[in-house]
Length: 335
Ligand code: PHE
Image 1 (tube, rainbow, N blue to C red):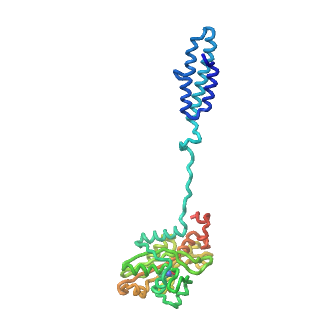
Image 2 (image 1 turned 90 degrees about the horizontal axis):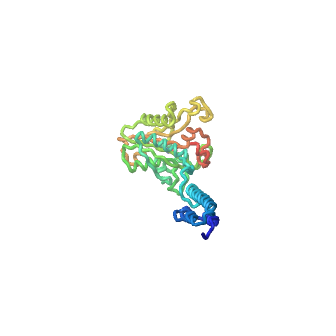
Image 3 (image 1 turned 180 degrees about the horizontal axis):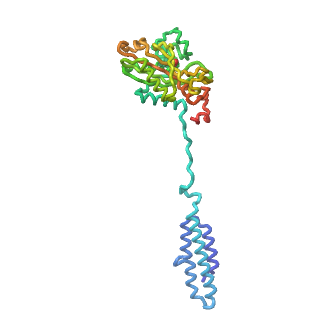
């Protein structure tokens, strides 16, 4: 025998130490302990030794065989259960990475709610440009140049003939130019006025409504707006129609709702009147119908407009309109 069993053992352990992967450990196991393995051969050759040496060497060789067998098994087990750094198996027990959830801006949410109520009542959605012709914003709505009604709205002028729309009412004219009656549309959008305080921002949102058909009456306007207010707030919220003036409607009204806070008793929110103004409305002025070429003897219609921020402030009890535009994530997340 060339090598002692002790040398074989040391050599096998050294090779096992530096074995890089599972395959090389399995190959080593076969090389030493397989049927033609180095340790197996050694044991077989013991019979060729002088009889008095056999028991001691035999015992040592057998112990080493079992020891190496245990070492190889342990190394194999460790490779199979402990993933290495290069292991690309997926640990399905790890918690997932949670994605940040997005939120709709409260003004968007209220706009969608308003549009939803009206589309269920058969209204279509219409849109128009924010940079608008003076013609659509004023002229076609029966507000000629130098008309005192232009002072009601602090207009941003782009040029003599182009403005940032001060209300969504120009969409009424654009819709009527393109479509003949009967029609029912709702038009949400941004509007601009040179004004800024606790309840006004230079940009805010309105939703416009327009319904034209034969025999449309002020009673229909009342019915539609009552349904709207009841669905938007609740059906205990009464409405009050106050005579008012808009050049493009006749008769015109401003609509108040019973104060959402004090229910008419009087509080800070309603300036102790018990009522809150939420809408402007009226029957479409015949002058507007004439401009778009509608037959004023056959058709009548009503129009209304409301401020989205105003409705959102009342619904969520927010007293400063600017909160909606400061982009404070903690504020926006509440809705
Ligand atoms: N456009 C008006 C405003 O901004 C509101 C309104 C719309 C009034 C439609 C009557 C009819 O104040």
